[in-house]
Image (cartoon, rainbow, N blue to C red):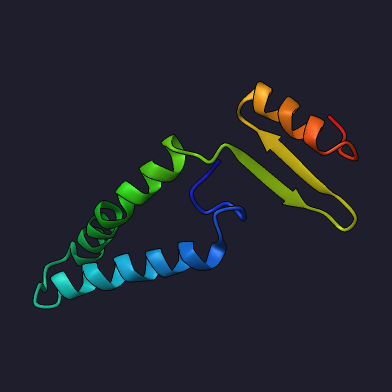
Length: 93
C-alpha cells in the first residue's frame, strides 16, 4: 500500500502535503539563496516522512476496492481472510 493510495484518502494526503510545504516555506521565509526550492522540498519531505513510513510499514490488516457492483477485499493475513469468508457467506474467496 502506498501512502497516497485511494484507500488512505486523497484529501488527507493532500492536506499533509500542503501543511508540509507551508512549514517549509515558513522556515525559509527569510532565506534568499539559490537552493531555496530544494531546501523547501527537503524540509517538507522530513516533515511528512514519518507519516509516509508509518503508512508503508504499518499498513492496515486489509484493503478494499469499491467497484460499480462489487467490493473487493484484500487481506494481509490468510487466516483473517478465511475467517472473513466464513462470517460472510455471500463473499467469494
